[in-house]
Length: 257
Image (cartoon, rainbow, N blue to C red; front, side, top):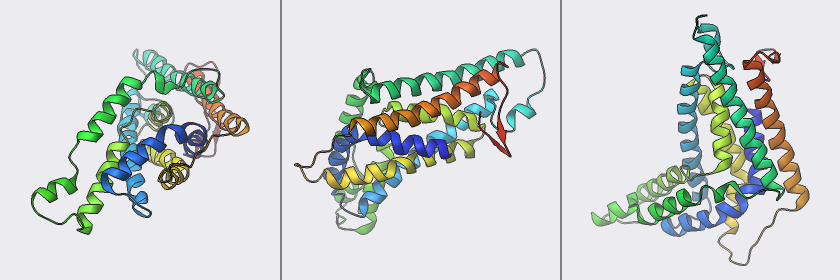
């Protein structure tokens, strides 16, 4: 979970500032999100991350990905080598995504969002058209100033924000499969979401001032890329360990890889 938190914190510094400032402004205007309501907006986003992490952890349990008790529960059978191959492939795929994100952060590769642009545009069209709880209450002649209506609107938009296609979230979701349990996957994604929270909240507050701009310095991008590379190395070693190339490393009850 510490690695997931650092991935969210450092990755958001160099990755999410440019992408999420526009999204935050769009959602703020849609539901008049100001000040403390931004906390609820991001709370909805992190809730979606946790739910997605629960699904990823469930997938890890089914596949028997090393990192929890599922491997010990897996009977030794003829099918186990194929399962180990899947374990290694998923972990190495996570490492490759992390490597690409790190390279993109330092400007040596296109942003991964370019490959997700169509999905992102589709998400934006849906967000502009989706009826919010406040709109539904308004049709029933209930005041939009109703506190419950406002809270439902902000939180629901946060839930939808969590579905925004993002390469950084994809890397965290792949890592969540290593938890081998729905609860573990949810905790990993919640930790990742909390890591993105400081930058996300700051961007949300600053995006209301059109003259505000923030461009991460090269040193900041390099530091973020280094942390993401460390995360990728951990996942690569975990994949190689699943294939028996190296040994798993445990520190107490915690598996490093």
